[in-house]
Image (cartoon, helix red, strand yellow):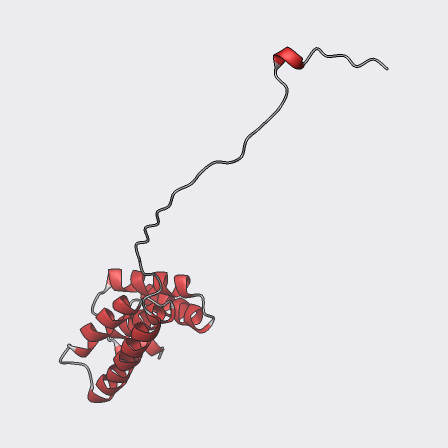
Length: 138
C-alpha cells in the first residue's frame, strides 16, 4: 500500500499520484511544485490530514510560517489525530515558532525624514550669441 493510502481510507488513485508528486517535489526542494500538489489534493478532499501536514512542511521550508502553523494546528485540533502524531506536530509547531521569531520578519518599514538647505554654486559660463562671431587673425 502507498503512504497516503495507509493513513487515509478509500484514496482516489489520482490523489495518490498527486501526493507522490508532491512528496518527490518536497524531497527535491521544489517547493512551489510541492505546494501546488498538496493544495490540489486538499481542494479535492480537505480532510486528508497527511496532505495538510506535508503542505505545512512545504510552507515552513518556503518561510511561510503563518500558513505552516495554521495547517499544523488544524491537524492537531482534530480529535482523531493519534497521540504520537500530536507529539510530532507539537515539536514542529515549536520549531515554526522559533524560526518565525528569528527569521520571520524580513522587512520592516522605518520612516525616515531628512531636511536640509542647499545652495547651487554651479554656475555655467559660456559664450553667448554676441561673442560667437569673433575671428582671431594671426
